[in-house]
Image (cartoon, rainbow, N blue to C red; front, side, top):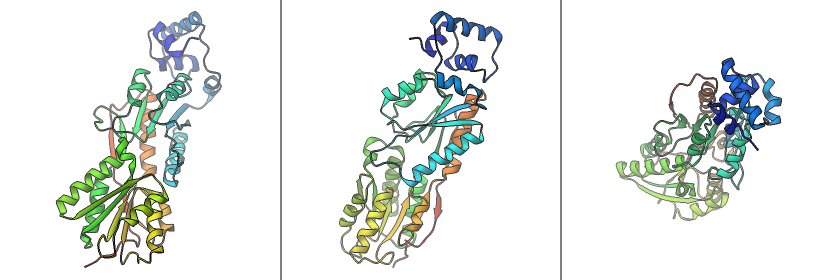
Length: 333
């Protein structure tokens, strides 16, 4: 069965031009259109029925490739999906959610081959992300919401997690804390960009400030927080915790409360990455929260510019996480 890529090769055009010639969503020369349609007839190519049905949409369809984890999505991750959908609609596009894992290239290839979308925003970007080569091979327009170890030449939007980690540690050191634990996700071992950058910056900053940093990582789970708490030692030793694991934050706070440890008097907690649900904890947790709406809007607008033929070249957008002070950190000494 012929594919859009086969038609593109025979007609000597890009795969996206084939889509435009068939759907009419973008003006192309009559000569190019006739060449594409001739290739369609010669190969017996039949465009996907769903894509044809959406040809009357105001502009088109974008995809959000956001890997679904075994433990499901957190409230913060749902927020990314909601704001990306709103941003796409504001630009006149539909948004499809592709929840396959970043390393599941077979499923991703199948999705791309269905020719439903004009471009992809890829999230949960890995240190060495295999999706990028696939997108380039298939001439898929894409923007990263996150970045690789070397993002040179890539268009991406990301939170500056190194700055958030550095500021979080400074925040605690300024308040007298000298023995600090970091509770993160084990995904840093898999090359998860935000976790790798956060841990690297915390370790560098701890050396610079001359403070002790303990590291505990595990699955994104309540149990990870309980296990981390059991490593703290008696009150007066480790006095503060930086977390980058939403469910573990809840588990750690509950474990401390059950053990009778007063918070924040005997243990301060600050979270990187947690959203508004941090206010529901007791005590409400001080956070460095990614600017989700700004991130998704920037990524969608960059992708739309590519899709509509007005590329800005490779763009590097790095936004600061917002410090939201609540009542989970106490000055000591």
